[in-house]
Image (tube, rainbow, N blue to C red):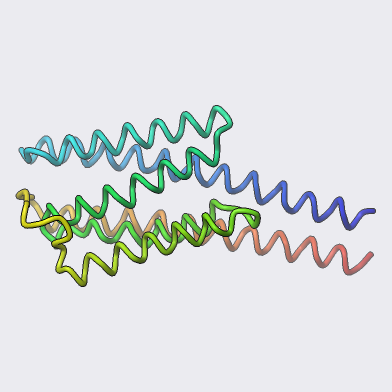
Length: 193
């Protein structure tokens, strides 16, 4: 009887952690996209501030849906939009801006925010991110044609994108390790019973 309860509590713990991770990643995404909006507006770029605000709005909708109890819809909308948006965005700004860095945390997030019963969604979004990343490099960042916008301060944006994507990646890996450690602790307790 205790073993079933302990395993159930592991799943409850993991679900709670996945939900908290999604909230944290979404809020961080909102902050970083607002930061990019201000930076792009200040730099005088034409289209980039609108893309930044669009990302912010979609992340706000995802956050709101998640808060209202529609966790699956929030994750699917957020990940679908970000994967598509980053692919297009990476094609229209110089490659040196490093938009493609965000595909690495998207893969880690996809692994972390979907539970065991959602393996198909988990693998779909990991493969989507990976496929788009590979496609960008194979096409020399020319998936949508030759439309391109100028990006002043390419080096600054490169560093911002690298650091913020690394932060989200570490956050996702930390989540996975925490879940693993808690599961191992619970298994040791079960083994001792």
